[in-house]
Length: 265
Image (cartoon, rainbow, N blue to C red; front, side, top):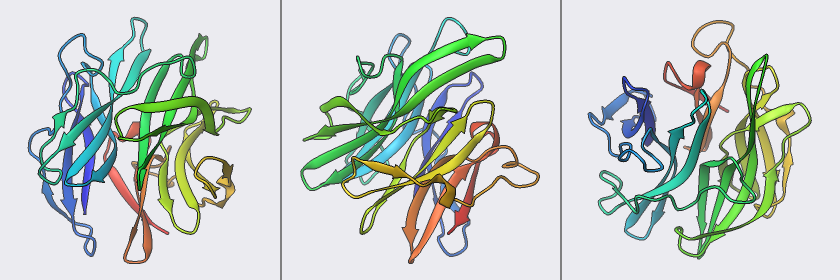
């Protein structure tokens, strides 16, 4: 199994690499020694970081979607947009499609767009992305607000969006992060969500058509450990079917500071 991930350098800028691991032993077999995608030049949408969000095979090519980010003037404010890089050698090396993002802020997403999960179904490309609504500053700190919206494309590059909300924030929530989606008899999705004043937990939703989703967060029984690297939060998940079992890769405390863990359903 090959897993694409991001890691930060001494300036806190995110770069993208990959590692390959054994399904049977869960041991790392190979890890890239240098980034396959790095931040862009100053002034570009990804000058302070590139973080992989989705990888899709398209004919002989591999499309890698990533978020690029810029810091805001008032810390820790930031802005993100979604870029695309394409591989012609099976996902080993990538070239950015453009120095500009393929999706950025709009009237539906006034603060940011981020975390695009892309599915290709015949000639239809679907993207489920983080839609940033606002950031507030108060005596308790900074609170960001984003939900999950939907976009469609005919080529995976040019995207149409109409503000369709797939996962809406509940009254006591501030964030719903990137979805990991598996299509079986229905669409099934796992995602981190954050209630106000609390750390990230994992939610679950189902959909018949891939557009209208029903949240069933109570079905997830994956809680933080009593101590250690994932004792406060469970964040940034990817679920895959391996040998008739569902495997989840996930981050723990502090947005993945200590690395990547694995859980089996």
